[in-house]
Image (cartoon, rainbow, N blue to C red; front, side, top):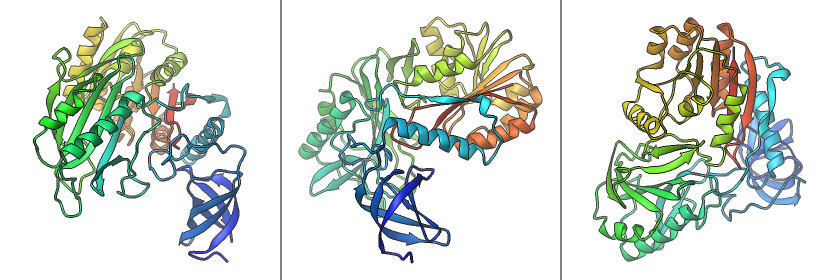
Amino acid sequence: MLKKNGVYQLLISEQGKTGDGIAIMDDRRIYVPNCIPGDRVELKVLKLDKRRAYGKLLRVIDSSDDRVTPRCNVAEQCGGCQLQHQSQDAQIKFKQQLMLSRLGRFIELDDQVVFPMVAAKNQYEFRNKMQFAFDERDGQLQIGLYASRSHRVVDTDYCPIMTPEMNQLFTILRDWYQASPVPIFDEVNNVGILRYLTIRYAQNTNQLMVIITAAQSFDMESLIDSLSQCSELQVLYLAIQSNPNSDSVIGDSFDCIWQRNNTYDGQIMDTIFGFRCLVSPRTFLQGNATMVAPLYQTLLDHLDIQSGPVLDLYCGAGILTMALSKIAKTTLGVDDNSSAITDARKNASLNDCDIEFVCDKAEHFLANHDCSQATVIMDPPRQGCHPAVLSAIIAAKPATVGLISCHVDTLGRDLRILLAGGYQIQVLQAVEMFCHSAHLEMVVVLR
């Protein structure tokens, strides 16, 4: 009989939605991190509830054929990667099945519209943005992601999903801290200063941006002296975030405290899908720098634009909008964030793209323009499309709707509404943007 703190030897037969392995005993699923189907493991049960249990891997007795050795030495502790121990082919198979099973909770899918997942070119050194927490232990600066379901910092010497240019900042910051220690923020007692590190990297220009988030201002002269020795660093920001109950990494206010030159005015420059793009601290970019072009090309390949304008409703800095302009006679971007629209106009000007950008709410724009012949594209945030936007689309009846989504459950919810409003799915295809995790990026085309 299954008991809390009991130790058992069991076969992992499936995977849960976060990538945990699942063993079954006494008709209960036991979720165990760092396991994959085919593993025979020894596990300890940590928690029981009425329908399921949660365990800890003690050792792998027999390995699955799909098990590989993680490249990261803290992969099993760090909350960033859940699947480094699983081969790429097995990860893709798991995530394709996960997409279909999760969407099946919301809609009925015709197999004929489902395409195979587009595999990532590189499973390592692909990130263009990472955010870490600071901690201190025995007088040494700790830098890392939180362990899963905790605020315990897992100290990281080298993160293999980042490039060497990004990783070198760990050494620079640790050396600086040894010479000029600054108190680490204690979110329990609300004291201290240093909180988070954000690194942004432009892979095609090797330019770095660093944002240090602190609870209050402090003398950063020694930090600037240390970081400015990194030749790739172009700009350094200080963000103030003093609320111990907030998980906002950048916070509400930030200042550019150093830049190598004034060419980009506190921004870095990258080349994405053939376009030169200015990147600001809050600019949204797809996190996998090596797969942005395949993602956008996947969408473009599935769109059949005969005539009519293309309307990018969540256009942000306009990078996808510029990509769409390659196949459309008329392209227009809409976003209700004025700073994003400013960036989008700059980017279009940099690339001589004839694109109109409008600062407006998507639902308001749709209600006040004839979009019946338009192709509407949406790449909404993780929480999906606002219900008002979906209602406005159904009322406006654009000929084609293209969706890029990074969350399968919110995509399922949005698709259920669009299907009920008369649309039909023509294409569903995932793209492997989030290597070593259970996250999904999906392209959908509806008519």
